[in-house]
Image (cartoon, rainbow, N blue to C red):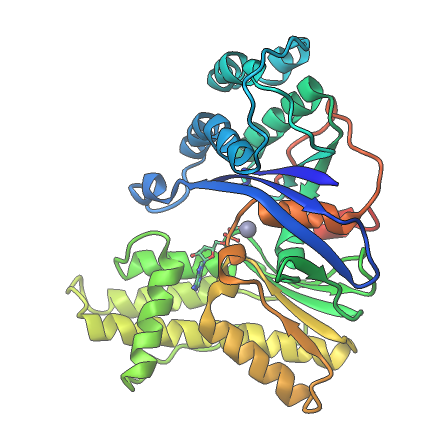
Length: 392
Ligand code: KG4
Ligand code: ZN
């Protein structure tokens, strides 16, 4: 089974082709035949955040080159005139004129690749950005006559954590997923491989968003997550004490999160210096204080979840899962709660923690055989919840 997966939910234009051996009991072998990604980070950096109109423009421009790159690495690129009807393509890409132009010029002149499915992120994410990927996927599906499937982006973040050494290994269930990205922060309980119950989520900013906002407050380049994390690490290595910030939601009994108050506390601290430029050591101690308060808050809720739910595995996913301090603190916490080491912790490999198309292909493969979506009625769902993908 070969799947071509498309991801455009935020500021990465990504496509991959993956091949799987079909569902096996506890190990699904997956070969990545081609993978390509164009990050728009440098474009958005000028605005200090992801700018939807710009994301749309870049996705439109990048999708065809990324597709060709993937087809070439998969050995599926062959020039050959294809006379299939483009009536529906013209309809699906009526709002993406530039993409339609590329489609007519380029895609009508290549041989349809031997693939069995097209999987596309249909939510959650930036709605206009999602639409570009969806309309491209609908067009390819119709033009090449290949079944189309919509994939929940957050499911992709969960399943990508299970992928290593060319295989998706099934965790023991029930599982607890800790999802921390730029747009979402949630705790998800899965009693079996295909059920997802959100048991806690952020009331305001996502963890990655908070990192990015703190990065901006500290005058660091966008996206701030990695920049803040590096400075926090420097402070720890050099023994610089963190600026003290209150750990959010410490006393709340539910499993929800909140990072906007912490971000405001960082801003107040910085504003207290009356526009004076912060020196590098001070930036490091603020970064450390922010990171340790934010991570403590997540870990506190993970501990509460582990008390309430008897889970057999813990899965970390989303862009912030690339954070080494969070990874280590989570692993230590799980070990403390389960000294015999029966609960396994899954963490995505570095290149799969932030957005990519491999995670979308993996989620499609994980879902196994099911009825395809209708290209005609597929929509972008910016607030698509994991709960809604229950048993799909
Ligand atoms: O999952 P993702 O690529 O995009 C969304 O689905 O939102 O996550 C991106 C987020 C950004 O906020 C980025 O700053 C953050 O992940 N991030 C990090 C690190 N690497 C990426 N945050 C903290 N530490 C990191 N090392
Ligand atoms: Zn993401």
